Length: 219
Image (cartoon, rainbow, N blue to C red):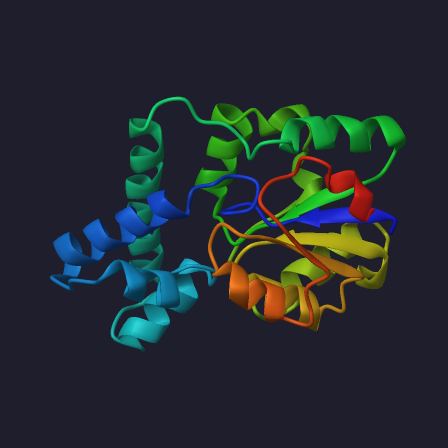
């Protein structure tokens, strides 16, 4: 393998619980819709916000309104994350980034996050030590949401490589399917979002891990 493509949410940052809390609170307070954690996990984790809102409301709201909703929800998410205190990347991730840099192995992000969240990750989580914006594919409203392969195809393109030459680190079912649809060389699944039994039974997945300690063995 010649490079590593990383998902971010739930993969490099164990933040699924913050997104779930934010979605529950936002949908309840904004629209009067009560959701269980299972409903949030099944419907709201993985796709980008535009896809989620469209699936819930169809054409009821304009694109401008949906964009405003998305920004409001992400403000709730960042507040939930900051309220917990010290924020840090997944265990082993900083050491892996340093090792990849030392070995000259290129890596990039393919995240459904929007720009405000990317800034949050660069600053609050120190991601700017390893990533420049040209190595971050994020949601600008231009690419179809995962499980479409577009995010991973674009991330590989920015490294001047084929997805087949890349290891992908993912956590959500839609993200794993996106990597499979992109024909990634290897898919390594983090067991933070989907049930481990499901991950281990998925033939598209090369290995299942809990964090990034020892991840270099997959490259």
